[in-house]
Image 1 (cartoon, rainbow, N blue to C red):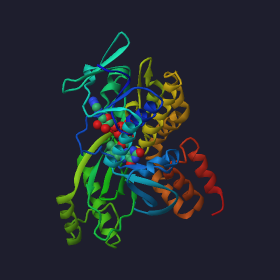
Image 2: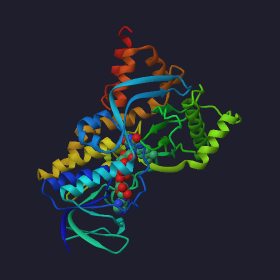
Image 3: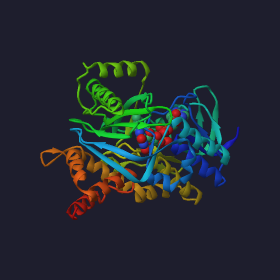
Length: 402
Ligand SMILES: Cc1cc2nc3c(=O)[nH]c(=O)nc-3n(C[C@H](O)[C@H](O)[C@H](O)COP(=O)(O)OP(=O)(O)OC[C@H]3O[C@@H](n4cnc5c(N)ncnc54)[C@H](O)[C@@H]3O)c2cc1C
């Protein structure tokens, strides 16, 4: 049996990118993924300008580049952003396939089998993992890159409480007939979170991201349907507010009927760690490490996780290849840990009230009348504006003359 240097469970962005970098650095890597062929990971597929700048090779994956974004407040006020730095939207089949091919090209051994975390054992400094199909592999180092429901993380670092999880669900639906398909993020009325419409080359990804402990399927699904129907009406040139349920009109009924027959539903969890969990969570040991969602690395305000999956892979590969894998913990904390911890503290306020209205309502109202505030929001979308100095930046730009 080949003994690998590293066994990486999960070939999403974190696992595949780590496998590519480690194999390029001379390590013998096995990369496992049990997802059935053609089944996409549930995801909006939005990749920020910051990520595209850090890893320009991502632009070689087939996706859509987005330079215009419509933000909507909970009362449906619109803010149109022309982004100085575009972001990209990918189908996760295309994106994950591209990164996995790069890992294979760098020399990683790819195995399309699901690993059973229960069967993973360590004895005499050797990890032994097995698949449900009965195959076995051995290696010196085990990496959990198996996503938000990571069995490897549960085994090595313990389970996360439900309050440290967000839920996202939605539908993949056809592009509008006239090929007008704006990219939209709309903050929810009366709920934590937002809805999105992300057009991809061959379909639109609609979804809602919210916290798991406040999740109620029926009212949120109703909201998403109002949003989707309103979106298609807008594409047909009809001015509507997103959050209305006048489902009686023949126009709305026609769109709903079409969507009910064509849209495919999906749902999944995203980590959204509380500040105290950021302080106590351990993500590596002598011969193991956790990357991406498995480590809890997603933005607790927006649910954005692809950047952190890739960056954690890069930081781990640097640590491992420099002969100091344990330095990974310190590196990610210094690099993006403080930012995500701050986001965790901000979440309640971001979706809370401010001057008698939701903060998101005030933020959009303010940005509509103020170029400086609008620019800060554009930077936030690009991934270039962090939370650590967000409040200071917003206040400073609001005080500048319009
Ligand atoms: C609905 C939704 C929308 C989102 N939208 C965005 C967005 O627009 N932009 C953004 O940046 N982030 C978004 N996210 C978050 C983003 O999807 C994740 O943060 C990101 O995919 C994390 O990458 P990862 O490699 O850590 O994990 P994943 O992408 O989850 O990859 C883990 C891989 O491990 C495999 N796996 C799991 N268990 C096993 C096992 N036992 N054996 C073998 N393989 C296994 C899985 O098949 C999967 O391929 C969204 C999440 C959801 C749920």
